[in-house]
Amino acid sequence: MKRHVLAIADLATDEIEEIFRRAEAMEARLARGERPSDATGAIMATLFYEPSTRTRLSFEAAMWRLGGAVISASDMKSSSAAKGETLADTAKVVSSYADLLVLRHFWDGAARLASEHADVPVINAGDGSHEHPTQTLCDLYTLKRAKGSLKGLTVAVGGDLKRGRTVHSLVRALARFGANIVIVPVRGLEFPRWLLESLAEQHGYTPRVARPEDVRALAHDVHALYLTPAKPHQLALFTDVEFDLGAGLANAEPITLDALYMTRQQRERRESDGEETGEYLRVDAQTFQDPSMRNTLLMHPLPRTGEIAATLDRDPRSIYFRQAAAGVPVRMALITFVLEQRGRGTQPAVPRDPGVLRAGPLCGNPNCITRREEVVSEQRFRLHREAGGRAHLVCLYCDHEVRIQVIGNRKSKHFHVYEEPMYGYLDAWARDATLQIFDSVKQAEEAGFKPYKLGPQKSIMDAAQVDASIRTLTEAILADTRELNDLVIVGIKTAGAFIARRIADHIRELRGAEIEVGVIDVHGGAHSIRPWPGGDTEGAPPVEVAEKVVVLIDDVINTGWTTKEALSVIWRSGRPRAARLAVLIDRGHRQLPIKPTYVGKHLPTAPFERVRVRLRELDREHKDKVVIYSTVDPKAAA
Ligand code: NCD
Image 1 (spheres, rainbow, N blue to C red):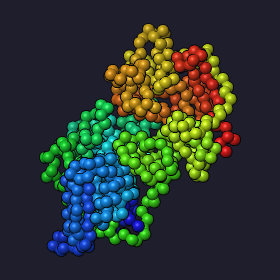
Image 2 (cartoon, helix red, strand yellow):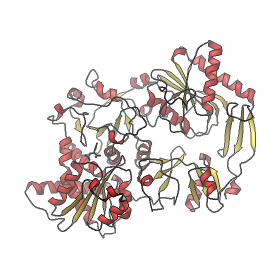
Image 3 (cartoon, rainbow, N blue to C red):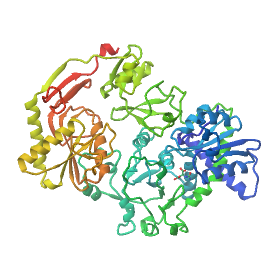
């Protein structure tokens, strides 16, 4: 059995502790001038497709110090990769020259792919924005030695949490060791959803969020880092509809940080689509002057690019050079651990989900190895059901979430556009291996699948009733809004946006005021609020919501997922003074704790029923109406 270390989850907590014990012993042996021979005769290959100083050199130093030998391709431009060789082939070939392969690559999931082809254990030395488990071992080892224990520590992680692979591995490990995590994201560089979801799923843990301003404020007038009590501050998991920052901070509690872990901005991984980010974090001697930071250690995986002032280097609380130095003994310990496991038949610590889906759609992450290279493994995704009831796929290579678009049954050869009420089928078909997931209806049709019949439709509201409901919503919004200048109405594309437009038009009729209308295209993956009518306004600046009262409009709350996504777009676009939610129809069995402030009509429905709002702007018949129909014919699905 090859024991790969592709992610921090591949090492059990007691194994990590064992590695730390060995690392301490290695340090002692090196200090005594011993020349260990634990890896005599073994060869380690290092394949680095991305620049590295610390990781590669400390791995190589570790192997030499263990009496082993190293072969290295440090610059893949001078290897066959430059001739177009696949990672799979390179991994296969090099593994026949060595006993261990250490890989750094720019694509997420590259280490897993290499491990599927290599005949020897693979250690991930950083794969794109995904994970960097051995850096985490160095970080935890250093932190534990400085503080005695990891349990109960409060560690803030700041900077580029979106693409920083070191923090992706670090927070998972911290959660496992019982440390408290505070996240200090820069706007636009927050932790990805898939990571927060997996923290919640695997460790039952939701980190708290502090704002960069809070950390910066320490340098001035604030004498502690204040955090709002867990819930409303969570940028990416933002579920509270009415969020009042002032009130949130009034209930804030001061905390003491045991460590602040900074990261640099991963500029080389930026998407080209002009992503907007807030001001980057920087800590200096002044930040650390505050009495509340007396025992706060300052950490960084390095290289730093201005986040930590050099004046802090001599401060005894700065331990980033110790983290780098730990690279040698920790990697010595890891190498002996991995080499010893050869032929032992041990299973990985955290059993890897074998994956439920044989073929399946493409991973949505453009940086995922599966989008870049042919993948032979048929197990590409696992099915994940969220606490709220929504289901999605998780890519086994890069951990990104993939939305489920179209599901089909291999046996009956029927497909259906997926909606959450169908989870039961999804789950059952996955279990009996008849599930097939498609990227689109077209793909399903091309594969010879036919649609399930929809149940009968029933009309619930006619044009006059829809109009009356929109007017009622308008009046309720007006009744709550003292200052119309502060109001911004944001509609969720498509129907929500038209309702938003109509509400703004009614306000103009009633009050003569011109209200700004924004559009969020949740399904189009939009990151910002576009000015009405959305879509072709790409060049225009996004709608400003900072300090405004935002009313988000949607047509139907089915499960709440769309609204939650839209709320986090609003939240990331600036800090509204308040955010409220208005919906034309509330079905009453939403799965997320989102409660609309304004509801046009309450329409209790069964889970398998679907409510559809058809608006004259969108409908061929040019009439408003609301219909209800059932989504699956259970007999056809059986
Ligand atoms: C990190 C990396 O490469 O991910 N560096 C390291 O391994 N010490 C961090 C970084 O590059 O920002």
